[in-house]
Image (tube, rainbow, N blue to C red; front, side, top):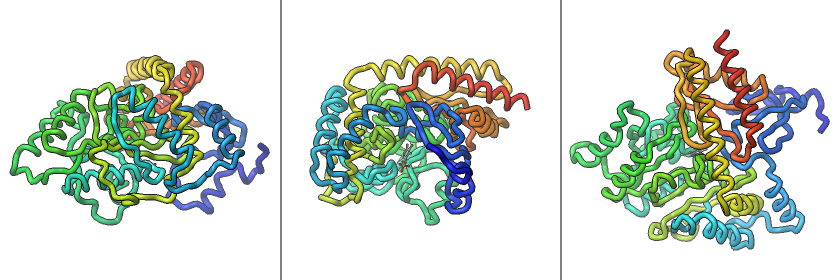
Amino acid sequence: MVTTKEQNSMETFEKHESQVRSYSRSFPKVFHKAKGYKIWDTDGKEYIDFFAGAGALNYGHNNDKMKEKIVEYIMEDGISHSLDMGTVVRGKFLEKFSDVILKPRKLDYKVMFPGPTGTNTVESALKIARKVTGRTNIVSFTNAFHGMTLGSLSVTGNSFNRDGAGVPLNNTVAMPYDTFMEDHSSIDYFKQYLSNTGSGLDLPAAVILETVQGEGGINAASFEWLQEIEKLCRRYEMLLIIDDVQAGCGRTGTFFSFEPAGIEPDIVCLSKSIGGYGLPMAITLIKPKYDVWGPGEHNGTFRGNSMAIVAATEALSYWENNDLADSVKEKSKVIQARFEKIVRDYPELKGTTRGRGFMRGIACGEGKEDYAGKICETAFEKGLIIETAGPSSEVVKFLGALTIDHEGLNKGLDILEEAIEEVLNH
Ligand SMILES: *Cc1c(COP(=O)(O)O)cnc(C)c1O
C-alpha cells in the first residue's frame, strides 16, 4: 500500500480525534497491515505483536482459515446483520460450540448473545444474577477489570476508570483478591464477612471474578482459592460469575481459564477472542436453571454479526484436538523460563513473574514502577508491541497470539530483554 506523508503522521489523530484515544499514544505510528504475530506501519517497519488486540487476537492477525470463510460468506451474499433472528451461521455456531467446547467438558450452559462487547456480557451477567436471586449486592475483587459501562465499572477496581463514571457506583462490595494480601488470607476475610451477621454485608446476588486478572496486573488466583470461592458461593447461594473475556478462549492454555481449577461457574462471560478474527462478538453462558430471561429483556442491535459468527465457528476448529492447547503449554514454559531469567539477571528491576499460560507479566518492584512503561516504550522503538498492566502500570504484560511460532516468540523475547537492558543502563 502506498501512503502519503500525511497518512504516515499522527497529526490527523491529534487534530480530529478525541483526547480519549489511548493506544495510539502508546504506539505512535500508523499501522496498515498485519499477519499472524506481525504488524507493519506505513514506513514499512515490522513489529512483533505481544499485545494481540488486548487478547482479541488469540489466533493471530488475519488468520487464513477464518479469512477464507468470511470472504466466502460475503461473496455468497450471506446475511450479514440479523439482530438475533435464526440464521444458518448462528445455528452452526451453537451446534459446534456445544459439540466442541461444552460436551467434552461435561458442561451444560445456555448460550446468550448480548451486544458484541465484553462489557455487554458482564452487564447481562450482573442483571441475570440479580434477577435470579432477588438480591442486589455483587461482590467483586480488588484490581478487577470488567469493562466501561456503569454496571461493569461498579465491579471494576481502578479508581481512574471508576471516576470516569461521574455518578456513584453502588450495590457492589469489593473484597481482596487472592494475590492482594501477601499472606493469602483473603479467603478468610471474605468468609468472615459472610458468616458474621454484624459485618454489614448484605448477602450478595453473585461473586464476579477473573481467574487471572488482565488489566489489573496479571494476578493469577490459585486453584485452591477459586475452589474456596466456589464453596462460599454454594453455601450462601450466590451465583459464581467468571469473567473469561480476556483469560478465556485458550489464553491460559485451556479453552476456559477455570478448567484446571475444577470449578463450575453459574455464568461465564466470553468476548475478545470468541469472534476469532478480531470481529466484535460476545456470549454469556448461563446454567439452564438460571436462564430466566423474558424474551428481549436484555437485547442489542448487533447480536447477530454474522461475519464474527462465521469466524468464531471456524475458530472452534482449533479446539477439536489438543494441538493448540499443547503448543500453548509448551511455549508458555519458554516464556516463563525467560521471564524468570530476566528477573534473576536484572536484580535492579526488583522484578517478580506473574501469570499463567499465555497471560504472563514481569512486575517491576517497589520504587521501580515506572520502569514498565519505559521498557514498553523502548521495546516499541525496537519493533515489539507490548503493553503494561496493573494499578500503577507497573507490570510488563505478555499477551502474544497463541499461534505464534518459536522463532517469533524468541525474537520478541530477545527484543524485550534488549529493551530492559537499555532502560536499566540509562
Ligand atoms: C476487556 C475486558 C472487558 C471489557 O471488554 P470490552 O469489549 O472492552 O467491553 C471485560 N472484562 C475483562 C476481563 C476484560 O479483559
